[in-house]
Image (cartoon, rainbow, N blue to C red; front, side):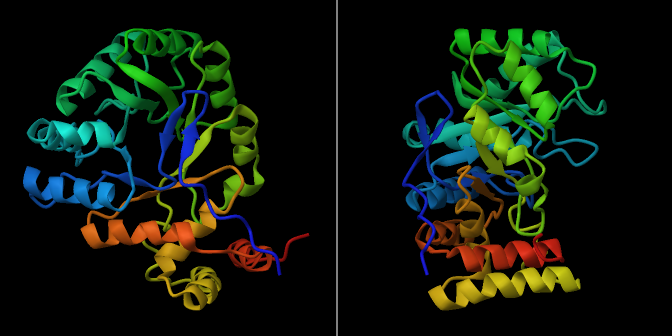
Length: 304
């Protein structure tokens, strides 16, 4: 039975020419549990040493509902300030546009401040990818596009992306941008398969966007499946994991990476061993039969 191709060693972000690893590491929980800059540096090294050079954070990471806004960026900034050589080894991505206690703010004034504030916390002159974290329904995409294009023109941002945007919102912003979008970041996992059938990934391929999958393990539900559906998906992943000597986690990453849109799973673990383990996903082979078995288990009904 023919096998699907393995992921390439690197993927390119849109038309930017920026090459990234086919896996990313996300820092949503970097600032938790009293983690020090030395602890954070160990995690950064674990990712980079495993060949995971695409690092994704956000200004909201660290916010607990009361405080902590910007803490994850600031902690990474301490790491980068202590070892300047690390910056050249990574493709650095962050996000903005959420302003507690407001839900979202992409007014021109706020976006400019948010980009500058992220750079200050990260202690860098520019980021490789800046993404709007969630869409602000009250912001006109043309106004947003002007600010983002200015950020690129000024050298503060190399390329642009969106996160949690609908297809229409993505298309509208992209229409007004001079520097076209390079990435989109939806929730995708073997337990969250909407985008395989609702056109999101087709739009990504049409526009040349790299999809970055957040919560690729279903928020931990793949590790400890409870419902009948979760258990069926886990069992389908375990067939391939067992045959190829990898964990279910690695099989889940590789299942996403087998899609032709070039999905980049974002590893959310803040454990050095689990981050490094993710790199094994580059060697897992899928047949169409095994791949579709996971999809059918997730659908809960046969394909038409």
